Figure (cartoon, rainbow, N blue to C red):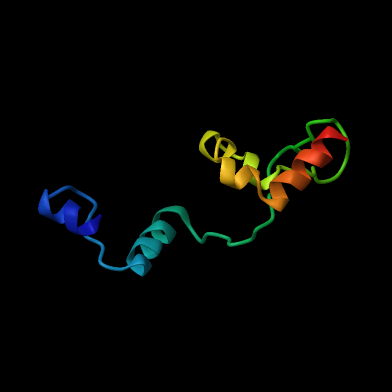
Amino acid sequence: MRVLGNLVEAPGFEYVTSEEIRDEFVAQLGEVRTSNEYEGTSKIAKPNGGAGAAEIDVPLYSVDALVRRARALQLTEEAQRAAAEGDA
């Protein structure tokens, strides 16, 4: 991206390393915390209204349209097991 930005003389593409970009962020925004904890202003509820972390079990080969229609994948043991559990 930097090279393309330099070739078309776009502003903001003068950085050479990711450290330079980080330093610019820190200069403009202050120190950035790297915690994985979500600290929003409100709690996020589970879709079913229960407490705690939501558990969503998506069968491996049911993710997108192309994979769902791939007969070879639907014949695997994992897909058959997921289909049997879904019928229960």
